[in-house]
Image (cartoon, rainbow, N blue to C red; front, side, top):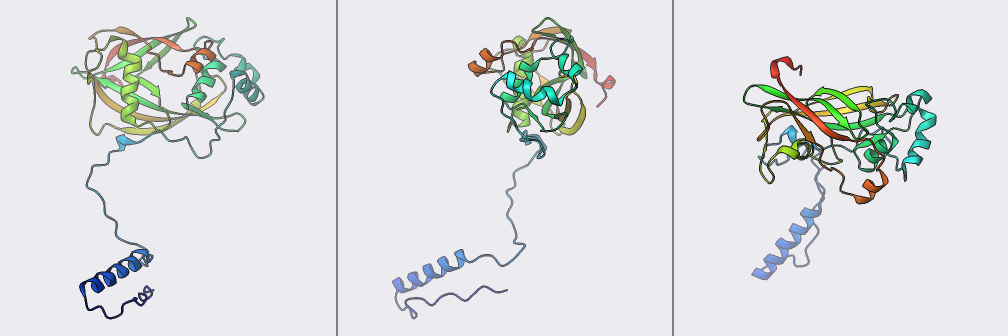
Length: 272
């Protein structure tokens, strides 16, 4: 369908320069405001490289309902009738598990969301950093020491829950600072992400930290080199990841990781 003809101009027979300018300006206004009748107009693309690595943490899956709980107790009251009683009772009491205060803090910080279902599904986006070295080895977290004194086995690369809207690159740098930063030089460019190493997948399983609570993990994985790490086994202390003082004060009872224990493993022995 062709666009309508332009409206008649106030000055139909321009003879001077000012008349010509007036006519041209009137036509410009008309055509710039006319909708494009072509259903498939050509688009212009800037020739900047777009890499999957710039993927940001989504606001969770569309079927997830976000709940805002004022206190850990309100979260506990909401969860209790939705989970098996024996599983819920194990939170924070079975070695290696976390408690209701820990989950509340994850929700308050936007790291976790819960679906309004029975049982609820906990959705978490995680960045996994396969730290490499020049000997073709991968850094593995062998175990953790929690704030309550429990030791939890890990046997996995460095990983960290992502914040809403956080890019993979930003999450990688933050994860390295929080989990390895206690032995690294400060104010240096010490993280180098390996080009084209990004991959992603979704895993669904029951949460180890919160027994009886199904979890959906959206995993963003990259390889990276980190300067300044020891050659052998070593231990790091968790850096404070919560900047909100109110959250710290309200979650003093939360079970958190205090120490990380690391070792290097031949990359050929690690399954992708």
